[in-house]
Image (cartoon, rainbow, N blue to C red; front, side):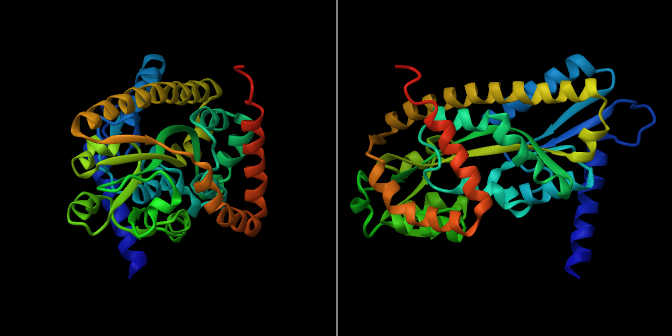
Length: 340
């Protein structure tokens, strides 16, 4: 019954895509390229997708038309990925953690303190020698990532008590994403990790069910968490990427010239997204300060030491992950002293 229901839902989504795009019409000779996104039209990822669309259509507009579906119009990220697997949708934007189901190498991006800085994050994510094998790892499932976007640095923010050391987290309940690894991470950092849905954070903090949460500065404005937050502490425990994921057969069936254009569109979209992300973060921080939020710089080393045993255990359990982790650290180490 579950399988039948899943097939029925996928079929319904495909029919909806066809109705919305007019696919099958004899009058429409252009191939429609559909991109599903969980984010709003104000999000940096959407600005990136518009750049992707503009680049493709400016060079292949006689053959292709790109249509963007934001706000989970085509379903959740997991459902949208299933549509990409079937070929009903060509691209989807999703968190890297969603891809862990298809290849556990993607788990590397969920580990705390893998990255030392935003510069290190960008250097690693932009390293083709490292990233191409990871992107290719899901091709057996019919999908592959083509580029990354910045989904932000996750930091702890609280409704009442400032957090500057692990000891400050003692007795606090901090919302985390719903996974055992994230709960363990927060517990090791010093708080009680509380898995809770994203939409419940505001009322949870307002009513004292939780004492805080962890995310980028954007949520202070976009989700109005700044209204119930007094302190935002730069623990910088996770640097998280979004991925632009494509149907593998669609890419394979492109001509070499077309493939180069679509790949270049992906690279350009990342450049646009990174710039737009930095701009929106600066604006969000300024607005949050006007709302009364105090931003605190903290020494991250004590937090890193707390979670390192967890990281070591996960790496030991997965030798493949260890090799990627070592390469990431090598890339970051090679950057040291370059600007001196």
